Each structure stands twice: as C-alpha cells, then as structure tokens.
Length: 450
Image (cartoon, rainbow, N blue to C red; front, side, top):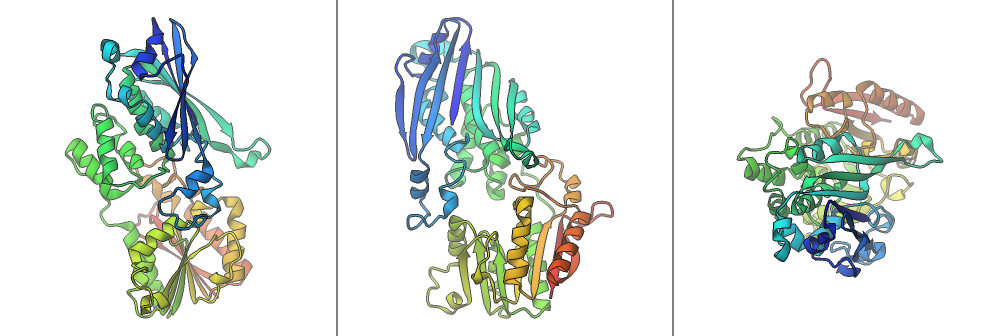
C-alpha cells in the first residue's frame, strides 16, 4: 500500500524538514507485521513528493494475531485477503509511527513553515470505498479538492460490477499536521477493517487527532461511527465528549426484538435442537441456552476470532466438563460447502447473514442448507431494503458496508417461494420491528417448514 504527499510552491525541498525525513536517503522502519519505507520520488524547489510504502507480510500477519490460537487456526481467510494491499489501519499506524513528529506539528528550525497552510496534496492507492459520494462528503468540508480513479472488479467478468477500491487524491492549502491527522482518521473510516481490537483507547485517539476539526464537520457522526466500527457504546461516548450531546438511539433495540421473535418462533414449534449458522459473537446462542427446551445447540461461523469472542461471551472455557459444554458447541465452518456437522438438528437459524453473501454464491448456500443439512425448520431473517428510507444517515443505500445486497419485500418473497418449492419446503413470511404502511418493517423473516 502506498501513500504519497506532495508539496508545491517555493523551496519545497523543506518537506524533508517538516516530515523529519531526509529526502536524499531512503529509510526503513519495522512494523508489527512488515516494514515501512520512506523515500522521495521527486525533489526540486517547486515540487517535492515523499512516499510512504508499506510491505505487509500476509503470513506474518496471520500468525501474529493475538487471538488466533494455534498457527493456522484462523482459517484460509487469514492468509488470502486484501490486508497487505489495501490502504487500511496499517497505513494509519505507519503514519503515526513514521511521521509522528510531523503529526504533532513540531518542526524545530522550520516551525513557522509547519504552522503555515501549504499547497499540499496526498495520493492514497487502493482505498476501500463502496460509496464514492462519501469521499466528497467527508473530504470537501475540510477544504480539499478531490479526484479518484475507479476500476471494474474484473475486466473479464463485467457482471461483477465495479471494484470496491479507488485511487484517491486530495489537494488543498492546509498545514501538514492537519493533512496527516485527516488521513490518520479517515483512511480507517473508509476501510472499516481495523487490524486491532477497537476499545475505549480508540475514542481517545479519535478525539486527539480530530480535536480541532471533527466537532464542526457535517459528517462527524458518520466519521465517528465508522472509525469506531459502529460500537454503539464507544460511538455514544465519543459523540458526547465531542459535542456534549448523546448520539441518536432507536426507540427500542431492533436486534433484541429480532432475536426474541426468533426464540419465540422456535419455542412455539417445539424445537429441541438448534444450529445457528453464521452465529457471530453468539447473541442468539446466549438467549437459547437460557431456555431449557433447547437440549442441543450449536453455533457456526467462518471466523475463528469471532468464535473465540463467542466462546468468551458464553464462558464455555470455564464450563468445560459441565452440562453446558455437553449442550452447546461452536463450529468453525463455511456456509458455502457441504458439512455433515450441520445435519441432525430440528431447526437452523440464519440471522442477518445471507445479505453478506455474493448473489452468485446464493445457490451454493441454498444447497448446503436446504438440500444437504435439510433441517425440518429453517428461520431466515434479512433487512427490508424499503425500510432504509427511514435511515437518514445511511452509508450509501445499504445498512452495512459488508452487505452485498438487500431485498425489498417482494424480492425476498420471490426468493423464499422459489427456494421453498425447489427443496420441498413450505414458507411463511412475517416482519419484525415497527412498520409503516408504505415501507413495512425493518426486518423480514421467513420460516421454512418440511
């Protein structure tokens, strides 16, 4: 991944003093999962460009995960992904480590220059961005003119559409420290996959680097929400410290209502054993274990680290050898491949999962669930896209950056009917959450029965 910073004007070779990096000597810095290199691609009185290049080792990245357990336990995704190549939180970490003095605004003999707005531009290669309109909304209020280059996902497969990556260039008359602060905060806002755990210390980092610009930004809530990975408690904490006002909350937690409705459906159908496919951190599993009716419960997720957090939340490690450990188990597995461990349950739940799948892979998922696992009861929930009209501050037209699609009520009904008929099920549809006559409710649920 590559970041370049260009200074145009007079005596621009002073960029070396401002960055505290000698323009005539390439330098290397060790990172936790690779190396960072600083070098200058052009040096003159009128134009000087410094480059920050990251070389991330994907094997070292996977093996170095604090919560990966044994080597290789994290699965193939830990080794085959975009992390070494996409501009991400690794770049923010490198900015802080390599340009830390410049980030603080200290420039010793060139302090007056450091305190002055300069004609600066920055180029960020391969920035993950699903909504290019947000580039304008985020950078323009900071005084930048922006340009970006988009790509097709694959020239050989036009139906795959556009890539989620852009090459971004921003330019404006700003202090160097401000440019670095903006990049430090905003690169992870667009990437949304930080390589480290997001905790309360991230609120401090956000407010420290955004202290003199974030509070007045028209997209401050969006930036805060994205930077903190939508962790509601942390977002509320940051917004309150930033503005003195609490962040907006829904009248009632939709997820709690959704999960309660699913548990009630399973109880009414007399289900004794349940498998939660795509269980995440175990929110549904926590409710299921409280009900004695459910004698056997399993949770499946493709992410090993997510299952580790579910294990901690459910206290399974401490429950080793107890009745709970005999009743509940966690399974690492993919919904794209036939797996005998998915079979033998009275019911399968797939809660807010299918919208994260590429549409081209839905057919494989359908066979895994309805043909091979074939539980007598299947409960599926997914967002109702029509209801998105109620979310004024939505990121694009989807509710989550990782959603590949969202269905209207008609689209979900058509898919459910086709799938039920194909695999010999009947299906009943319902809605969860506060509804209106035009848009329906925020969540739609399909209950498939043999």
